[in-house]
Length: 183
Image (cartoon, rainbow, N blue to C red; front, side, top):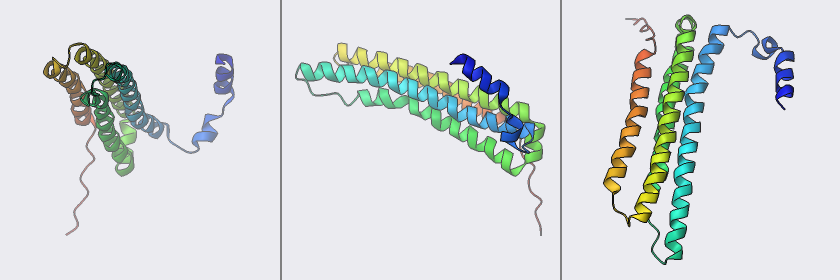
């Protein structure tokens, strides 16, 4: 499998695939894709972890005849916000590529770095938020609902990492010059 992939890479004419695309444009586009792709992966991992814990807790509640706790949904859904934050950065990077291609080309490495940093920051924030959510579901299930406020605070702290990532990376995107105003 690995040797087939290596053979494909060695024998593929990427120039023909990319056509006349400038390498700088390609780097910028890859940065745009990485921002959202990595964040979505982190959200999926986080939601998966918390969702599995919630399913187990609901099974335990059902077996014991208790009503199923809706509170677990908060833990399961929390990691989705990081994908939204990455989408905001992705849209700004994409707008720069479209509206100011020369500026984007001059800052292609920066755009790639912003996309990668955004994707990784959001991915790990979402993934860890899911891990905290999974532990929170178990704590609520075993502790008969006690400790909910502390779990929300822990979820909020790791959410802040995602918010900071978005804000700091948005601040690094080069500003396109204002269009000339015609009187």
